[in-house]
Length: 94
Image 1 (cartoon, rainbow, N blue to C red):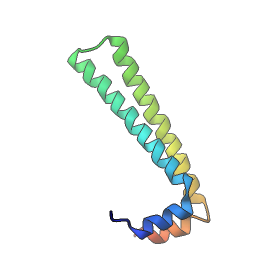
Image 2 (image 1 turned 90 degrees about the vertical axis):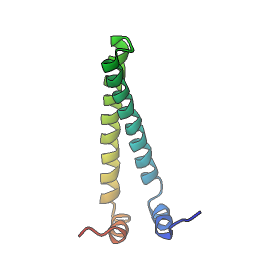
Image 3 (image 1 turned 180 degrees about the vertical axis):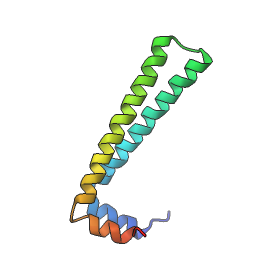
């Protein structure tokens, strides 16, 4: 197994913030997939209209909320004086 040492240093300094960020992004992906599944069922005519509406609306709501939550976490991590200089030196913006 190949592990980059730079990612290990990042995990030691950032800690649970990036883990929580990744969790919210995964939840958002699941919500978006549920929304797409509802639209696909709508076009195929496989499910009841209430089921399709629940999948689409619920998936969009979960995806939007998790995107908002992950952006708040990312803004907090970026604003942190402890983490931001380290991340900026690892991933310079040109």
